[in-house]
Image (cartoon, rainbow, N blue to C red; front, side, top):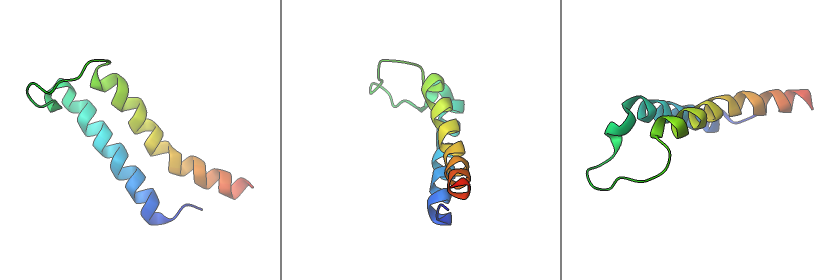
Length: 64
């Protein structure tokens, strides 16, 4: 089973990803913009992965 402190940090990181995705383009700072995909296309799947990873880990540990 995953330690509760590690699980907490996964959930915090997921919430940060969701907040940044909700802000959209507004979280970039002035001229320091970056190219590539929009923040929503990158941060929403990352947030979902971070949110589900502790559940997947604990389910795998219980199964084996």
